[in-house]
Image (cartoon, rainbow, N blue to C red):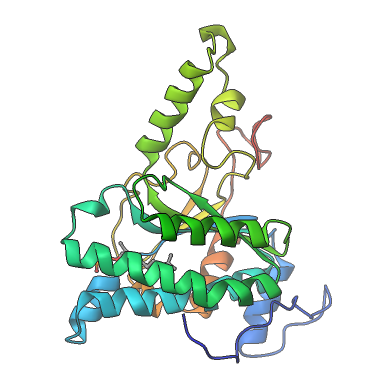
Length: 273
Ligand code: FPP
């Protein structure tokens, strides 16, 4: 993530409700606030780092570095727009199949990003969380992740969740195993109970899931949680995905009719968000 200080404010949108649109980005800004609700939870499949680098004749890790730098500006923009939960998929349970050099490079980039960014995120009211498994990761990296989570746990401006070593099926398997270990009887299994065993327990379901780089798949991301999510697919590669495009994705979302399987827009009872 960049060390530039120009884009750090988590300030709220200052346009009073009902004020007429002006011009340029302000129009978009007001459009976001004046239409339907801003999605409470946005999740992003950050795809296309490798292609971004290859197109520039750079090693793939340069793409992951550029992708990491993009996390900060998207997080601050999301907070500014009123998004309360931002979940970013950084590494899947399948990504271990990549060449060792790339995997080790990503782990190194993650570790450096935590050290470099946590203080700034904390000062700006971001709460860091992790979903996925930390098992098998370097103990020092595990400690860095735990420390960042502990430091920021009382912040409430935005919850920034990093999905690292995350897979939807692995999440369901760990939930089933823990339910069995806890002696849960078949008649006790409800949607609410299953949700309480997921990595995302207590979080609202994602309203909007964005996938960059032109791939039209969900690839094992938030399998349980995404049933009523709206999707936004873009051909933009993750390092180039700008705050303006995030805003555009949210405007797009606001124009959709969400019916949650019913005839109107009320979420099913028991839904976490
Ligand atoms: C997808 O692009 C990206 C990844 C699998 C890794 C993303 C990792 C980071 C952004 C670093 C982690 C750091 C933090 C701070 C969470 P791809 O490699 O699949 O791109 P391609 O499809 O073009 O090959």
